[in-house]
Image: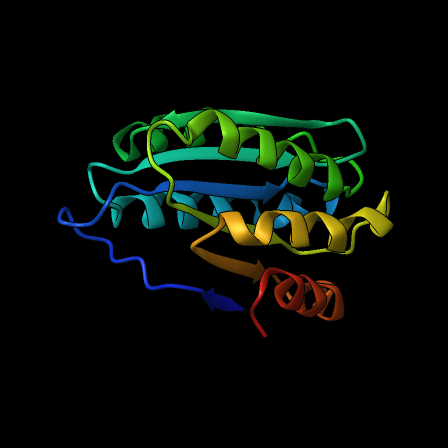
Amino acid sequence: QHLPKSEVKLSSETIPTNRIIILDGSGSMFSDADSVKRDVIEQTQKMSQNDTVSIGVFSSKGQFTWVCKGTTPQNVKKLVDSYRFPFNMTCYSDILSDTEKLIADLSPISNVFSLMFMTDGYPNQDTEKIIPLCKLLAPKLASVLLIGYGNYYGKELMAEMAKAIGGS
């Protein structure tokens, strides 16, 4: 579900955008890992040279990492190609909470942030924290793209997340 809060053009004339990409690295994503990597690389190739990219990967509670923070789109392919997903359980809340800290850290570069969140599953840890975290992030994001992989991702939760962020 794409949530255009304001249109962010992918051209060199726009204000630099800090693009945050969050990837599900849980076990159920094993078969989609290569597709996810290709999708991330394809999206970053469309970005302005002035944008920055931060890529986070989550799996179980306490298991998330930032593959990169505030790097250029040109550096993403090498970083993504070399990254190995952790493949455990599914916890959205830790990475969403840390996204707020990332936004604060990158605000001096640009005040424009977009979020791409990619998952195939249902979170099974700290689910009660997800919607409040989305509401907290909402005013800080110019655009959001929530992507569900496969036929069994949590469509109802993704719709609730979209609504909490200001979309539908």
